[in-house]
Length: 166
Length: 114
Image (cartoon, rainbow over all chains, first blue to last red):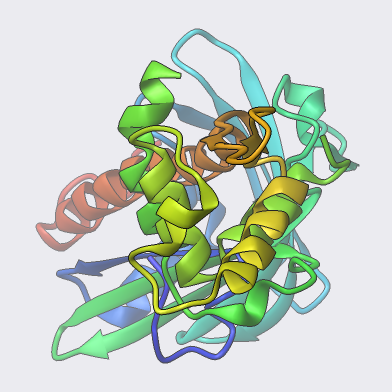
């Protein structure tokens, strides 16, 4: 969901948040240490057979997700900002096994998918718990996407039934 | 279809009037006059929004001479919805597992495995 107070929220951004019952330092380590990332990264049913993290600005996060059917999808992110244990900003994309950026079509997805997305992750401390907000934004944003501050996710939801029939 | 469908789709969706027009068209075709009814807006203003939606390939116009009814075109929305859905699926799954993992860690469980 987008955030109504964020001046950038009208661009095509998607935000997901979750509160975890764990101290912030631990959550941050779960996000930045490869052996920990492997334990949770990826959609339901996927495994992460490969994960490397070079935690410095300009450093690369490179990973492989394996689907339940055994199909591998590689991805990478380049760290643009690191504030331990508060914030991570990465430019993310699909990748090949060597870590080169590849378009979504490489994995059979649509030709209009963005080549790169900006992913910001914030870790907010809440007396022993941690709120994690992941914000994803295509780069570059659309030409006049700042005309409003929220809502495109909602309309996509609202049209889901129509799309299922169409 | 434009070369960057996602960009034009999201740009077109970045306006409450245009979203309302699409929502209205999802229940069936409508003329510009019908679309303008719920808004305190002139017909030319509504037409301008329709042109943005047409350029984005989200709306097509019929050939009936005077009324030229507007119709929702779902294909570009599907691509946008797929994009959103794939991220949702990724994060729902990841967050569920991260939750379990953090719980295990704090219960002094199987931190060092795997």
